[in-house]
Amino acid sequence: MVTPVTACGSLPAYTGDMRSFDDAPFLVIWEVTQACDLACVHCRASAQPGRSPGELSTEEGYRLLDEIRTFGEPLTVFTGGDPLKRGDLFGLLAHSVRIGLRTAVTPSATPLLTGQAIEGFQRAGVARMALSLDGPDAASHDGFRGVSGSFARTVFGLDYARGIGLETQVNTAVTQHNFRRLPEIAERVRESGAKLWSVFFLVTTGRAAASMDLTAGEYEQVFGFLHETAQTAPFDIKTTEAQHYRRYAAQHGRTGRRLAPAGINDGKGFVFIGHTGDIYPSGFLPLGAGNVRRDSLVAVYRNSDLFRGLRDSGNLEGKCGECEFRNLCGGSRSRAYALTGDPFAADPRCVYQPSTTNSTEARRLATPAV
Ligand code: SF4
Image 1 (cartoon, rainbow, N blue to C red):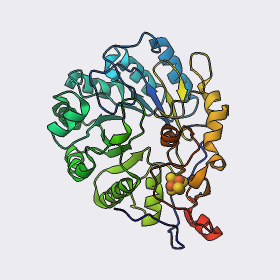
Image 2 (cartoon, helix red, strand yellow):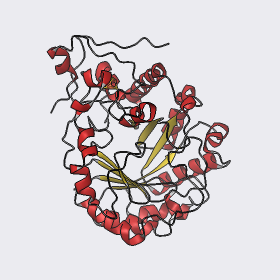
Image 3 (spheres, rainbow, N blue to C red):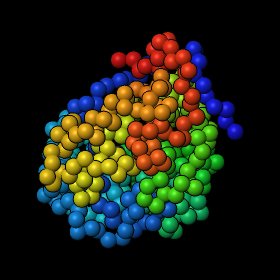
Image 4 (cartoon, rainbow, N blue to C red):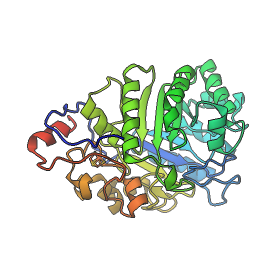
């Protein structure tokens, strides 16, 4: 049982970077397909084996990448489903790299992930390949991923990439089934030589059931473990849909290692393009603001009511709206929507109780330095 964290006057000032995300996102995720041969129990995309006829075509994909480039050089991630289900994947990746986008890819660990495919990523100029690892052994990982052999394929992929000098990232979805085994998973990440451990916290969309999620107190326990691990780990750690890890880190002191940019959140430094071109603030927030087939991605990101509203912390409700950490954190807008139906509601998986006085000093301590 974790004691609820309360505001106090001795919070360390957050000294991380803080940037305006009004003009351009830091991170663009393109779901190139929903097709996938895995059947993960938590799947956001409720992926199916076959490709949808409504997917963006090759030409539409090229146009999309060119438009992403007009934002500048956001990190652009090709995700799925399994991107390897698209025969035009390597051409699209090469185009992305050629026009100057920092490009990453997140294939699924299936027989499609061969040494040849991994070498293809490297030839295309991909900066990093991310693979999922949701348990420290085959029984736990394959049970979660719904296909036997997935763990072995993940280990193979990470080893192969390391062998040819391609940078890797490990993604872990934290649920009731694995959160007590995170230390063992962290050890696997260390052994793999991955540069980044990206820890996903559940948003109950797709096949993810609410009963799989952790309690708010268990989130806090995991934050404690991640923060402690980050002090000495040879890899960076970031969280996805757990913006309040930034609040935890600010309260407990910086690690010296890189966190995600302060304040990044759904629609705020982040945009997700679905497989048919729909534009979302996040892959976990199913509120569309347009479609790249008919709308300008840049205009939707900068000007749509949804994205502008999500970037304004003054719209936050409940305790997130009163919280000293709302600009640094802001809570998961996706989780708020999934659990309450309101994307501006408080994140129900946060134990923090904002200061009742909400004093100027408390706000100063929780405000990211510019
Ligand atoms: S109350 Fe909301 S804004 Fe404050 S730390 Fe928790 S999730 Fe973040």
